[in-house]
Length: 463
Ligand SMILES: [Zn+2]
Image (tube, rainbow, N blue to C red; front, top):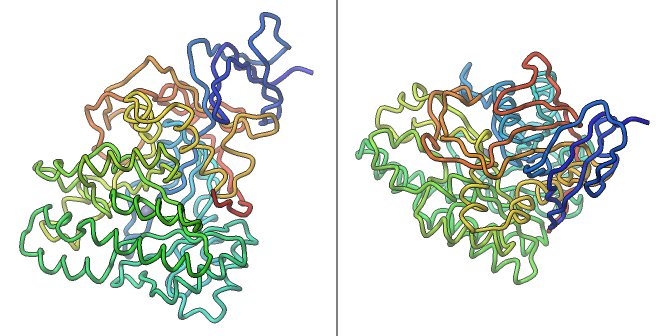
């Protein structure tokens, strides 16, 4: 038997271990791993990976592509441009969100979203189910069970965005946590104190500049909501996963809840780890707007420490791309500023450059945060590890090579990058999805071939 592909001479990083192994791939799966040897079994193609690091394909646990912003209005990246950027950045699976209205069926939302994405992506994909307007649902637990059965065992709730009908009450969150606990599902929460943010936005609306963003989302708005929801989770026994944590205080609450034995986990993003609020002093500071906003260097340092110690478990993008044109339309009104930044193509490079290269985390830890933990927590058993039987999803990087970040050479459908001009290491030489090279040196192998599939996920694991 000949293997489809051999990747020889490289170092694999998986399962807390760096090893000199050759990888043999057959039918999209990792068929064998063997120590480097001169005599190789036959393979149809060989990639010489000498001097390269072979990582599992990155799983972006938090992405927004083709997100509806209003009638006929969407974010700038659709599933095609977004997954192209992801593939060129070493991501092989992304998890986006359903978009059904408050009180509507998560399962119906899931089906609609799968239809939107199917046949339009280069990477594999899955969806978290939005869980909004719970009070309006006749049988919330049954609605959640139906989505779990269809392969989406994770639910997104908000403690903010009341005006958009997304904000959940404490009672709704408790109900969802209890149902999730019974179902083996997981509730993911965007935690900011919505009513206080609304009030502060009004207070600072007269400023007409971007400082209104950090002033209306001070750290305490996140810290209060994280503390409150962690308390609800403790009472419900319910597993909770906080998305996009931005403050040292919130990381501390997650750490304390975990120390008390509660099933609480947390995610952060490169923008909170390696950008800081000094960017708001720039003339184009509004391009760096996201919710919660980027914070201080001290917050970043604490978030890195929490990642290193395993107190936060995941780095994801919260990719939400807008063009500078879309951002500019805010005209000084903070309530009209689209929140979010492109990040798919730069997730792995940013984690590698500002985490591993800068000595904040080890290479093995980075692989845990980008690949292994998202696979475990989000129920993707066939992904996230380099081991026999797993999908042959790989990101192969040259640890010595670097590029100057430039939006012009990226696949995102926008005209700026928050990382513009910064030197990034760890951009992938090759990205493989189920044994096929889908991207090489920042370019898609075949832009006409949509190689991605919808993934039905199994039950999450609380780690
Ligand atoms: Zn998000």
